[in-house]
Image 1: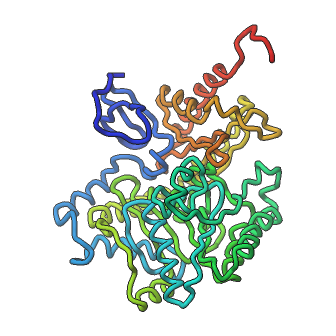
Image 2: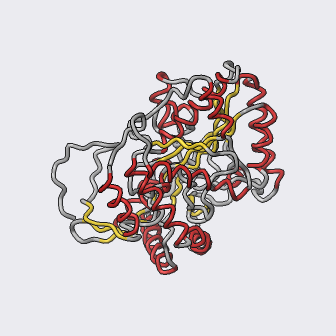
Image 3: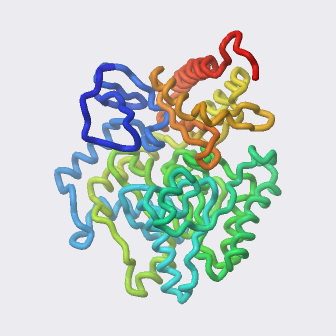
Length: 452
């Protein structure tokens, strides 16, 4: 790899990466010509793959007309058309769309709309937003307040009001059968218990990822969980917010993951695959009754400069058209089932794989030191980081986080673009096999090492 020149950029760490030269389909190339298979779609963003010519052409057409029109000065055709399409894809009654530039903004918008709805309807005492632990809902202070991932939230606790949490339904760690509706009820009833503990009159909303994202590694809820959550929210007048930032956009085989359980929220947040990385874009979608009440009460006290940017909206509309016309949700279902089966097959070779989970092409596997007890690998090994680096060296990009609230545990998201083929699955499994073999060698005790 060519040594990178000094950089004025900084992000999380001092770690450097190769300079990107180009990206097409599921592949990316650095300036030295090395090819990488984008096995995580970036950060689960590039749902339709890179450099799609039809999306690029739609963006060119919009650029020739306008690249910016401030929402307080103009309406734009691109934003109106995308809002109409988004509403059509959303559950009945969810007809109002507020565009943003990313997932954190979408979640922040949802929380603030929920609060203004409470004020507009004479329930100012409702302000608590219950979420789950672990969970991830964004990096702004409001989104962090409902995030359950200690290393990310603890430094900022003094600057925000952390919100109540309930356990995420990680049946595989608790030794429960996720296919049993009683398991779903067991976890969902923790929400009711927390509402009662907090005082139902103070609880504003419950926010949940229908299929877990980075913090729980593609966690699929147990049978009956989503429906039971909806019932509990209705019983206590609590708004239900679905965080579909990662699971939305068709990745699970449905445009919104909650469709798998026929459950509708009151407000939802979507981003990432919504414009698939072609432009910064996200959306909050809300039920008419909520928006109308807020507008009648004086308006939504909220906004972003780039809300409804016409270039981003043109990209988003073209992405959705590509998903629909190319049958990419159907492909995500088929290829996702194949990839999940192949990942599960790796468990026969690698005893450190303790669980494989997910829906469609939102998939993950988790490493453990003892599969029967689901004991995590020693935290000092930092397997969540090491395996990513090994795979990167083999030209395979995957995404990791620590499973157990950020403290320990190692899971890896394997989420290639929805255009992936059988051959790409073969290549992913080959890269993972090489990488896991190398990790196992590194974890093995040195020959002749004395036992403790």
